[in-house]
Image (cartoon, rainbow, N blue to C red; front, side, top):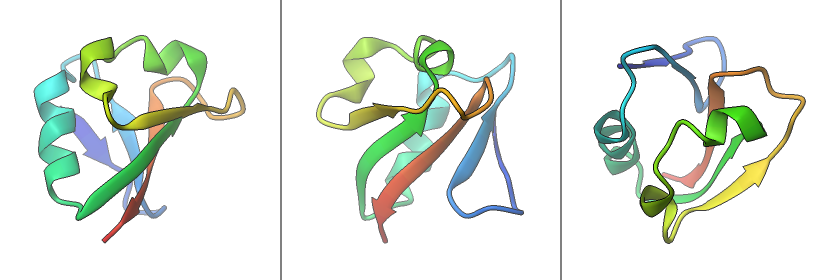
Length: 73
């Protein structure tokens, strides 16, 4: 399960139960996902095969288990 942070646009929080299927479901709700923004520890939680063709931007100022989606909706 991935939790949508309602206080900030396009901010999501990973839980212990998060999986790639949860991520796919979230991305399907957007017209086009340009990139995922997270820190280097968080990106390791996703399978590398998932990110093609979505690019990843590493920003280590973002806290662990949090990511942002840069998208066009």
